[in-house]
Each structure stands twice: as C-alpha cells, then as structure tokens.
Length: 336
Image (tube, rainbow, N blue to C red; front, side):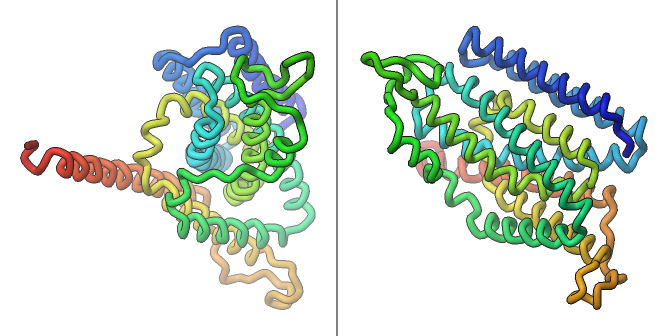
C-alpha cells in the first residue's frame, strides 16, 4: 500500500484538529453530555470510519479495504472491553460526571500516543525480523487463555498500578474535587488533585491495553497506515460510547469470552503466518513450513463479525434471562 508522506501528515493533522476542538470545547465548558450530543458525535465518528474504509477499498483495492474494516472492528471491540476498567477507575476515584469527559479525553490522547509508539516499533520489528510473528501470536494466545479463565469475575476489582501508588505516596495531594485542573494551590502550596491521579491511572492502563491491541491488529494487516487509522477511529468515539452504553456494558456478560476467542483466533493466525514465513534454524531447518495455512483477510473479517455478533446476542439473551429470574425472586412467579 503506497501512502505518501503528505497523506500521513494530513491524517495526523486532521485527527489532531478533531482532538483539539474536543479539548477546547470541554475545557471551556465541563459538563455531562446529553444523549443527543452523544448519539450525534458517535454517529459522526462511525460514519467517518465507514466512509474512510470505503475510500480505502475504492482507491487501494478490496484487500486493504477489508483489512481496515477487520482491524477497526477488532480495535473497537477491544476498546469496548477497556471501558469496563475506565468505569471502575472513575468510580474508585469518585470523579464527578461533569469532569469525566476531560479525564476520558486526556486518556484517549495518551492512548493514541502510546499506540503510535507501539505501531512504529511493531512495524520496524516486522520489517526486520519475521520471527516476531511467533512472539505476537504466542502473546495473544496467552492473553486469550487468561481472559477466558478470568471471564467477568474481576470486573468489579481494580488494583492501582504501581506507578499510581508511588505518586500517591511521594507527592502532596488534595482529596477534594474543586475543579478539573491537575494541580492547584492549597494553603500556599502547589498540590496535585484527584484528576492528576486519575489521568496517571488511565495512562498506565492505556499502556497495558496497547500491548494487546497492537499485536492483534498486526495479525490482520502489515500496513502501518491502516494500523494507525484503525486505532484512531476506534478511539475517537470511545468517550461518547462510555457515557452512552455504560449500563449496557454490564449486560455484555459474555464479552470477555468472545474477545478471548477473537484474540485466540488472531494469535493462531499469526503463528501460522510465522510458520509460513519461517526463517528460524531450529524450526524445520530454517525452511518455510509449507503445510501452515494462510487465513485470508476475508475469512478473518467474517470470523470477527461472527464472533462479535454471537457474543452480543448471547450476552443480551443471558442478561434478559437473569433479569427475569431476579424479578421472579422478588415478586414471585405470578407477580405476587
């Protein structure tokens, strides 16, 4: 895929401009967004992603267009799972609703920065060392098994990262939510606010999330430009999604299992690709492994859509059944 430096800089510039507008609007008027505002913004971001994907499909061919949509859906689904942790962080630090937008926006900017770094490192590693696909694949399979075993049991648990604990013990902090600023003056001293701690928690969490998401999307496309744009579009609507479907997230009881299957599928796809391109001397004498299947991007996209659809439907059916059982326990089978 031939992407000129001009297109790269235009893409980065437009994404930065959108984020700047968000920063100025939220910085000027911290507020809890209305449902109409959320639906409008989320619809705009999803619409732009679809239009962009169609553009890639038209100008660069079906292969790259399909890779973008597969990568975008995968990153979006992983981002939705990340919202569980964001909600727990906001709850743990008792962030007022009107300040949550700013915290999320800064967290998203940090996520873009971290993922940009990982994208560059990943691209360099792939271009120079084909065996890196073994590492990516093994890590995703490990993550998938870990996610499947944990399920949703740890959704209500959150342990502060070590860096956050270190900051809390070493710098002067105020426990009062007086503004959305990260530092204020209190009794003549400059102190950090809870917003500073929340941003550190979100940033550390974003860094850990990037370890899963970047290898996953490199299992679907080797094009750094598509990896970057898929991540940008997945993160752009995350803030609106947080406020819009916070309650719905609790009903996606099988989401962790669906994502485990998804990551496992991409992990094995990466291992098969590594075997197909094998150059390691202790595997098949350094020769390519001919029997290793290459999973097409069309098959990958179909599997991704199928997993997400089945997971969502089964989750909603299970949630409805659980809610009905709870009502029966409270009121009796006949509503008595």
